[in-house]
Length: 212
Ligand code: B1M
Image (cartoon, rainbow, N blue to C red; front, side, top):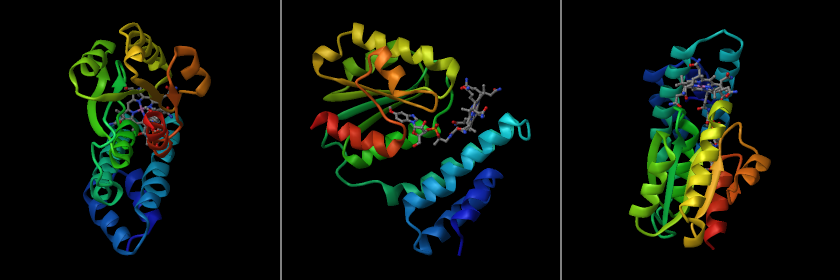
């Protein structure tokens, strides 16, 4: 039976072929899926980031760790998602232009879906115009959300938010949410976003609050 530590070690070391079995075993051992996600897989990505910063590993190793985490999340997904999908309206999400990180954004999308929204995931490297098109073309949009994971893409996030405001989303009652590791409440306030949350779980709670 796999432990949370074994799941974490597999993500850290990019054991793509082993992760599915380890997560399944951890679930079968009765470990809470949220613990497997947060204490196993997300914590492991923190270790990966620290090793990258210390020049102990490089981009290919980061990439394979990310692939491993994604595969693990696929196994966890049915155990995390709820069944009231779509009832709260449409939630549009994407990672801003210039930024290719998608794990955090995918986790926000997963939590938001389980909270009861229909999620339209635009993907990564998304310019402001694409966010605006989606707001105009998708039905029943309640919230539009953007992630930025690099300090160098915080300016892209600013462009997305200011462009959405200039396009009149606030007048339509649509809320703008932002997040990502370098983002703070102060930055979110400065660029005019309606809400900032530090993690995916808090994003789901905040989204429900915004439409209630
Ligand atoms: Co990159 N990378 N990366 N990377 N990468 C970081 C972010 C970095 C901190 C690593 C480091 O130096 N310690 C650093 C950024 C430094 C900075 O900006 N100051 C960095 C760098 C420098 C780079 C490159 C420039 C490296 C290079 O090429 N030399 C390059 C940039 C590419 C680009 O985007 N243009 C790059 C590339 C990559 C890979 C492609 C190899 C890969 C990404 C693969 C993928 O995502 N599919 C990668 C990875 C894996 C990382 C680390 C190791 C892990 C990121 C991650 O997935 N974390 C990361 C180090 C780290 O995070 N410690 C790092 C786990 C994820 C769950 O956390 O994404 O923060 P996070 O999401 C959180 C919250 O932020 C929040 O909720 C999530 C948790 O619940 N959140 C929201 C996110 N979005 C939200 C939206 C919300 C609310 C909350 O509301 C809408």
